[in-house]
Structure formats: structure tokens, C-alpha cells
Image (cartoon, rainbow, N blue to C red):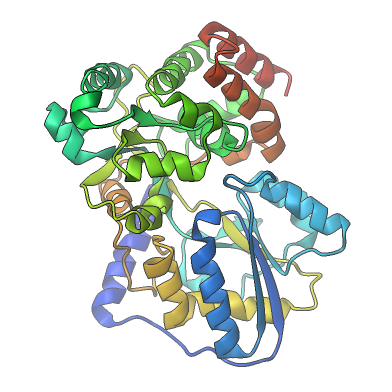
Length: 419
């Protein structure tokens, strides 16, 4: 409940700031340099453009790097390689407590920074503010409202497994009429483990539970498995895989998965509001929004919303002051705010930012948040290696048909018990 109120507070204060005028400042020049590495390749073009603008305005050098998505290396792997090579970036991303533990000795205490006073979702440890939130994000099942209307399916009814099963069966029989290749655009290939073993996995950990409740995750962290919850979750995973395009599911990348939905070749998309820029680029004008995941037999009327990740500063860098300026400029300058909201399509995590995203999926996240119908992100309580190296291959085997549902449950159970 505390985090629900936090998310609502951000959105409410942002609305107030809009009425009174945003709080902005001008970029200052100090002739330094900053290297930033982040894990949202979908906004890399926008980030590169902002970095170039920031460099021009400030006289600093700005090197922006993106990994993840469909690239062959994860952010964690890239950071370890950079550290080993003595090339650690000045600013990098952590997703949660497991990442923080890995890089704790390098992470700067930013409690005194100006941006820290404008957000309630900063990453804090032992009372110290150490992570600057990238945005507020959310995901559920993105749907094409126009197609659901043609099928006579009310998205508000999609709150449990049985409702989704009936809807998928009906839509599958209408593929030719709707002009789609599949009901769901889902990806579980080797490069897309973050879709299955991060985002979908969170359904097992958080769906239907009060915001901030970590008990289901903690049970698994303790090596214990709720067989009923895992069994219902396996039904959901099987349903998504069964009604997905096989090529996209097993070998597709981010572009093919998101492109199928954006180009009206799938009714549903298993992604989040960060795809808004992709929708705009594809000129996807159909009505869209988010419905809850159907990973349980019981109704679960909410979607997953949180600050997805956090910028941290390498305190051993010689460019600490320039890195601090970069983050504050991101929050307090018109150019930084324009990048976050208008260019990258992100929901701002700062009360002083008056802009609101234009994308339909971001607006849907705001609507679910305003109703208090949100569930936590607990996937980052598990290490990146466990999600990427242990769980992701299990999902991949299930998607490829190498294992059936019963074997998927057995492999997942063993993974938690032997973690």
C-alpha cells in the first residue's frame, strides 16, 4: 500500500506542477566528460540524440551506450567486462537490491542531490539515496481494443485464466477475419529471456498480491514452492505460448515481437509502456491499453507498476561532478524533461516535471495507477544470473516444445530448490 500511495503521489504532484508551471533550470558548462550505460535499447536513438544535445549545450563530452533487449550480452555481463578492463562507466543502471549488492563498493551516496528532493521512488539503502529512478513503468497484456471490439470481448473481463482462455480460443478462430498471424505476440527466444524470466516471471511472484507484499517471492527464495500457485502460473505460460506465432516466440527479437502488434498482426502484446515510441514509429493508431495478466484462476484486477531501474554514479570515477550534473540536468532542464517524456515516452518519476507522456500505453499505466490497481515488481529480488542463466533457458525449452508443462513445473521447482 505504501508503494501504491507513492506512485499515486508522483502522478498527483506532477499534475499539480503542471498547473503551477514546471521547475526548470538552464544547463551549465563545465567542460567535463561522462559515460553512461543503460539497458533500454528501445530508447537508444533518443538517448543518443539527447546526449549530443547535452554535450552541445554544456561543452561536456557525452558517451551514451545501450545494451540488453535483443543484444547478445546483458547489462550485468557488460558491466563486469568493463570493470575487468578498467573501463567502468561514470553512470550505470541497477535494477534492484541484487544489482546493488554486486556493485555496492562503487556506488555513490547521492542523498544530497537536488533531484532526490523531487521523487519518492529513489533507490535507498540504509537511509541513503543511491539510485536515481529512470522512470515509472508498467506492463500487463497490451491489447488492440479495435480487434477486441470486433470479437465482442470486453478487456475489463480479462482478469483470470478462464477469461483469457475463452478469449484466445475465440480470437484464434477469427484470425483470418482480423488479419492477424497470432493472438499473442510473445517472445521466449535465447535473446528474449528478459520477457519471460523477468517480466512474465513476476506474475508468479506478485500477481494478485498487495503492493509491496514479497511473501511469494520470499517463499521461493527460501527454496520452498507453492505447487498450486506454480501450477496455475504454468497454465498461463502454456496458454501464451500456445497462441503465439511460433517464429516470433522461439527465434524472434524485440523488433519482431513488438512489430507484430504495432502492425496489427497480433491482438495482444506481452510488453510494457516502454513500447510507446515503437508504436509511434510504426504509426499504430488503433486504440490500445493494458489488461491484467491471467496467471491465476482467481481474479487479479491490476497490472505491474514500479520504477524499473535506477541510475547510479561510479564514485571511483574522475567525472563524478559531471555525472551529477548530467542527472540533475535530466530532471531540471527543459531539454532533459523533453527527452524523458516526449522523446523516450517515459512516465516521469519526478514531481517537478509537468509533462505527461502522449503514448496510449503510458496513459493506461497512469489510469491503472490512479485506481490503485497495481502490483509490485519482485523479480529483481532474484539475481540477474538466476533469471538469465537458470530460468530463461527453462522458458525457452518450454516454448520450443523440448519440455511439456509438467516438465516445466519440475524444472522450475528444482531451480528454486537448488538455487
